[in-house]
Image (cartoon, rainbow, N blue to C red; front, side, top):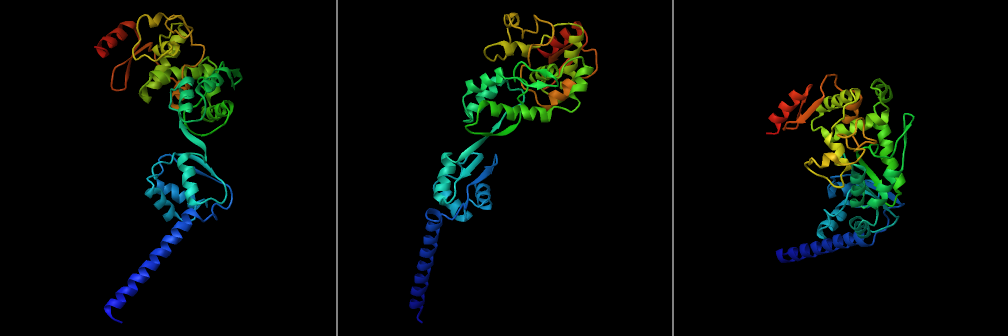
Length: 331
């Protein structure tokens, strides 16, 4: 066979192979409906790459070939367009249909939502709406009207008991059911000695959660959480006003980075400058470290604290010592 004839044969074979591969790929992407064989749900983890998503879909029988699916997404520039969450795929779809359902969100049945420690019920409601889980006003209404029983005491609302965590929140679910996700997690995370510790501190468990909520909003470093809790309990024992700025902010209609003297005179049961004792409800939703601090406060005679920069507070037993700390820390 002459070199020219061999070249022609190789070109012919190559073209035939390319045509076969192209035909097979087009069939796999646009015609093959053998996957998934039944309705299938797959969870896309937060931070997952598209390659990881494709492998997960293949492992769960949603797509038959990872290579063609990844290639399709990259050719369309859609390999970064898939949101984390849970997806439900009906049986017998093409890869093209699967990709479109992923990117459009039409197959999504749940979305990951992260609730940071210290968020209020209002902030959680807004976060849920931003994630597409429902209406913020409806969530907030549910959070503020519903109650739960904690160690025999009924709460006034769900504020303080919507535990901060990352949740896979079902789309289209009722605010009641989504609230239960958060409160169920609160009961799972509540320290097992909570009831005994609260009684030893002469408070109910919901009142200890109120202390934890103030600690959550005031503390910046974990090491200071038990110390701040200790100051709160010391003031309660002496019937001193708590004078916790975070309670004032909770009563204000909008966040303020710095309170004014007029703010400190606001007519509200949450004004801990004007009213002795705990505020009527928690002022935020505390995480586990703040709950632990509220149940295991530091033992000291400290009655004052002030933020001194670098994430730390300084503490004082007397007003004179506190004023000196204020002058030093706020200069």
